[in-house]
Length: 298
Image (spheres, rainbow, N blue to C red):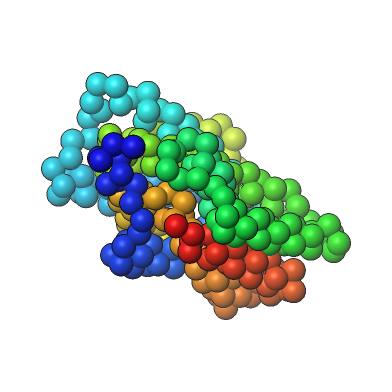
């Protein structure tokens, strides 16, 4: 590995840990915000609005950093590949969350570090999957299976939504690894802006074609959900997450998401009244434990 690659693939330091804990705590409210917004806004339209808002954060960030949003030679293909994964992952997340509870969606999406580590082991030199990291990720996967079991035993009607959100988690794992590779050569602000810019027209056209009759009257809670997704998650958290992935080991950064399901489950219970059943509590506990184990691996 070259010196430059080693510098951009180093273990997390104190600053990196603090930023990771902050953004993943904020991310704990993401599925809740999505669940609230899709009560009134169709899933693809919600995604379109979310990333229009996110551009209000990313574009000024790029300007302040002196980063041009114009792709440089050789970048457009990388940005298109990343944007395709982004489009599929967000569409699956919003559609899946419409068909399951916020608390279950939080558990399934929070398992994405399992897939980050799997894909990182395949694509990134110096980020192997073995030992404690492998044990931790298998523990997290057991948590996914336990949470899924409730749908089978109690006919909760959430299995379709659960499966789609889990597919979103798999796509997110692959997208974060591709992001890790892309931001070694492309500034994070340009990378994020082009994910939004390439996905936005597709979300808009698809929503106009498929969702024209699915809107409901918007209340303050729906606006709040959209603003949280757009400005806090897709704006601030995406920028900070790209900064982390540019500098530190992909699997270690993603492993700090073990705090996300803890915050997410608590917020969904307190704010939406989602029940905390034993399979959900056991599942989130295993996911958190597994990813915490993986995060301690060097």
